[in-house]
Image 1 (cartoon, rainbow, N blue to C red):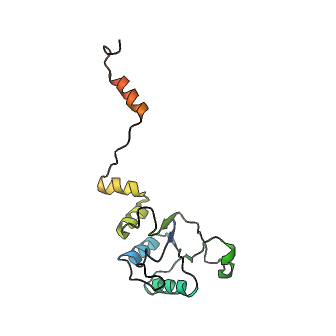
Image 2 (image 1 turned 180 degrees about the horizontal axis):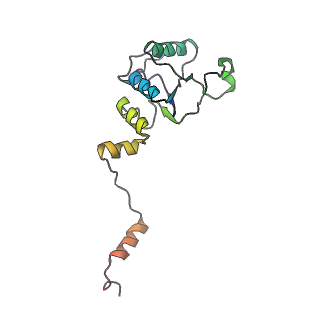
Image 3 (image 1 turned 60 degrees about the horizontal axis):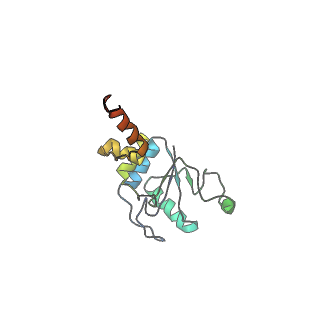
Length: 152
């Protein structure tokens, strides 16, 4: 699976343009996902020197990305003005997700098991959302629950 990962607020705490403290288990989890043969793309608003600092921060901790702000490592940096900033990935891990960034243990479970967040809640926490029953289903159920004597 190709996974695009944001840097600020996802791997490290928000301190942009500085680099914040590492979010617990972020690097460890990403390295474990790489060991399971997932391709990781660093997908960040950072550019130039600030981007190099983010890449170096991860590299010093043993995390190398398949590509940085691009779909493939061989995409040339000077072509960046001609291509979209949106990378193509199967999954995006970003603190700006709807609902925010889950804890890295949750992220690992979801990626490893290929679960959606709703499935994670159901599988791990036995969380069942009450489903709204449509007017038509209620009507049909009422008709089916009447006895043969009520139908006359």
